[in-house]
Length: 243
Image (tube, rainbow, N blue to C red):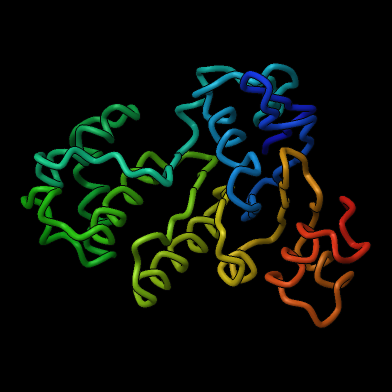
């Protein structure tokens, strides 16, 4: 679905990404992992055409990615961006129409999603009346509503209690079963281990570990992803080469 070929990006003297090469297989959940400042957010912004790389190329669905492809992406950023004074339903319809849906289709899909997530009673409430977790549910729905081929979730469980985090995990897996390709960026290794088919670990602007999660775990017998993450980043073992 997505090839990331030799992507580099600097900001002044700081190297945010250095010759990053990855591929995201169609219909999978791809975990983009790494410590703070590793370069994950920069890469996500490049994929969304928010910023441009200094060098390298993105191949999206078989062709060089263009601005027109961005509408085929659903992006849930870590920093939330709902308008506090607007009513939930009004805002959700507005954002859906920015993604190309007509008003009737947007309202129908929104009510289906809101009903499934048990939030339809929030339709006429202002966003500022909702908790952080409630706002997160609304923004999740808006992200997936136009049924994009590629979904990018940056720390999607932030602000959720365990029950609602499990609900969201089920929805992510349901979207995958329906054919969506998902990039999942997180610091939560148990969630990544639970959801991801493939992972890439970025540290200090470079990919230091990547591949199918099952293969990586087979190369680190008896270790969970938390331990693999720590040992790879700190360099305490020899298992820190890309596979």
